[in-house]
Image (tube, rainbow, N blue to C red; front, side, top):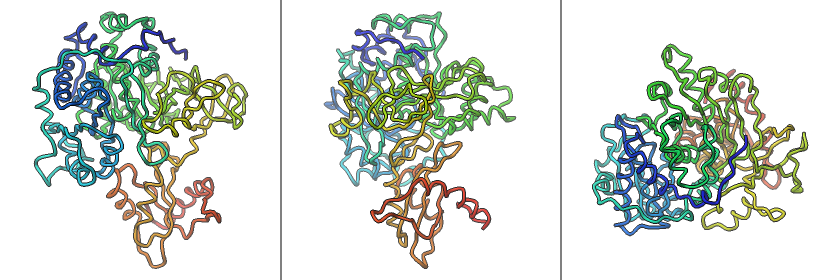
Length: 565
């Protein structure tokens, strides 16, 4: 898939400046639909300008950090836009975090402001017991929204920390400001150390990197300058762009594609609940004639196609879909085939990238003829062997993916990790997160996985050492190892082998409850096996390959014994 060649002018882009220009060009066009209301581009720009005025009045400006602890909703997007208007940096926080995890990220990010819904207020209060909260805390009311089954009611106090977000919407709007393409955009990623790290983009280099995602599926030439960006957005003869993110905006794929939709003058749809309801999603695609769908592999597509193929899905038409994007998650051929059969106009794009940069490869399905689907290296991607020789043209060779296109500046405040992830090889800077592949030939590769202690489950990264620390602290636990076991829906599931002292009475449910009490719910082991011992080497290392192969055997043994986890 050929990517557009960026122009020097487009590298001077700033997203807020572009969105302001689009709002002037098509003020009455719908920008966001959510919670039964429609915001036009004029409405969205005005709301962001008022919140920006509040941020500026509190002393925030270029380089300030605005933490967003929230699931997908209009206020998330308004806050991002408002931060961009003053050159501030939104900080993405996983809304599933418990108080201590939230505190860690507030400390790491050095947040100057925090925006959160009232339903997450108890976690904010808990975080405040571990770290001073930012000077400005804005709370978004959940009144009138559908309750979420994974949200715990905030019953211990009727008032969440901070002042109402509504007061910010009543503030005097900030006039458009001169904005720099060098203003920064952070994308926090769990990475491989358990400590969140901020990947630092600039507005200019991120926009350059997104040109294919923005314009690749439209019958237009890539714009040569920023005025042409606005002219394309204002055109009424182009196919509409209606984007529905089924994944959280706290992840790069969803946020960046929503940002891209606004560049095109498109409409963004948000579902009414943070909990994923595939039937509601299918009905929304049908009713709103969604054209761009953001998913997370099997974890999202599986339930969606199951609903479409069920009696509940009878009469639901998803043929409006023209693009379905997924990134960083297992997406099996059978589910791609089922979806493209229901949406025959859609191009399914399986993006192999990372928060650190890319894309490295694409798996593209336009119809049954593209199954089986193998990832094809993106322009600018090479494969390095152990001696740093390029082997992407050597069938059968194995190596590590590296990309030399537009990429982030590196990790915020961490030059050592930046040098590791963004090495300079033969005078060229690459991004190399550590993904191993086998070369198949003709630009195709087979993904072998990342050589790090991270489980990617349903699009969430889980640092195994963090879970192991919770388990080994449980009374009676003498040894433990946590890893990812393959799973057809989630890609991987968190799996734990637990060794206990003689006479210890411990159940899988207790193990899961303890992790859920201390950490975000997605970090709980879905599979728990109690074993007599872990065969460690004299240095304490484990043969992880052998341990993983034992999972089917242990599951079979438990089934025979009538047990379950």
